Image (cartoon, rainbow, N blue to C red):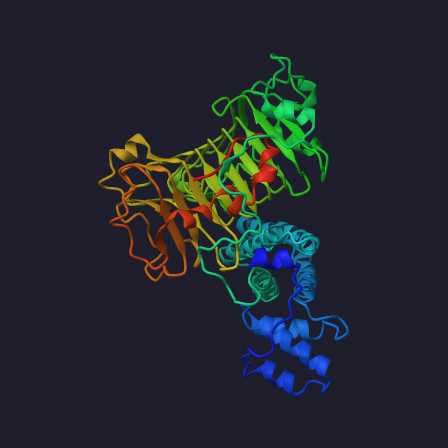
Length: 554
């Protein structure tokens, strides 16, 4: 549907003969409206649009006072008006958050409020950026931004739920109320005439067919091309190291800590800033804030350049803030580095790498932890030839993410625990998010493999109602339980999720004994094609500019 709308620029007049009227405030509003025919036409059009949104009364009450009867009632106008109203409501929430001080609180409460403030600002920017994207018919971009704002809301609520404080009730109430407008805007944008689409369907306005794309666009300048394609950043092979900010533990670079280099990089840059991190172990928690855009971090190899930290939920941090490397800046790239969280399994959630930034790509890196290792939080992300280690839910979050050619290694959990690779948190059927694992190798660490008869291991479990995860043409070893997937809890809904498998190999890939859930699918080729790079993360243009290889074929 998004493709159809993009093609026709939303200039569709809604049919007036197929309306089903509401029996509550909407009907009353129509009865009491002006006799002016144009006014009634607008109200009818608004009702038709709003009736398939998650919160129809909120939608109707928001639009009925905002749309001028002198403006043609086309879908573009209604959707833009809804989004403008959404931005107004989200801006109001900023005042409540600004007056909520983190003082006199324990670390967990303070961290939850800080998370909310940071994520709310990212959401506000994303919503404002969505307006010109919609006007330019870049529907996938707008849907990615709106999906991310809903994820930000969920993360904020999760932190507040586990860190009660004096301002918690009003914050929770305001968040839930405000973000109903975001849900409605996303619903209108995703499928305004037919309601929420099926859980597994991916809508993108471009389909580029089957091909391998590893080239670089003409607009990528020579300096960028030279650095990104080079395997040696030290200058030993003729590459000029002065083109990068250099970090080295021995003082031979510009800085001795990675965070200092990030702080030095320009704010809101449209151009890439290259940070070469020389061999060494960097014991620091590194943050790339949202205003540090287009940072490129290059190391001396995944086993040579390592960032290590030990923050965890067990020590009072929020899951979001526990990350050893936390990335919020759009356009982030990393290559030939290692990221680890050494808190240990007894500390529970402890993130090694968290990314909540759009157009982020990670190549030839190692990501090591136990529970919650890799937090693919939001927006669009890509991972290629990475090694990812963990125990429970160790690839989790609500980004639209594709992992290709990665080694995914499950480690031995604590006694009495099971393991699960993924925990996807899609909470709304209109979000264009999910985890696509393609051409990867799914293995167990030696100690787990030798205990595979005692420890249950799964491909994933659904963190939220509309969780979406697929495995495509990957090797799956036989430590995975024959059922494949696990519920989050006994009363977990499993008919609204989308779990899929296609063309996998290995002794753990057999689907005959898989779960019989309504949301589980042994996919065919067409279904699996929905989760390729160009369809799922609309990635060929920006991925070309990274020089990182990727496949757009199955």
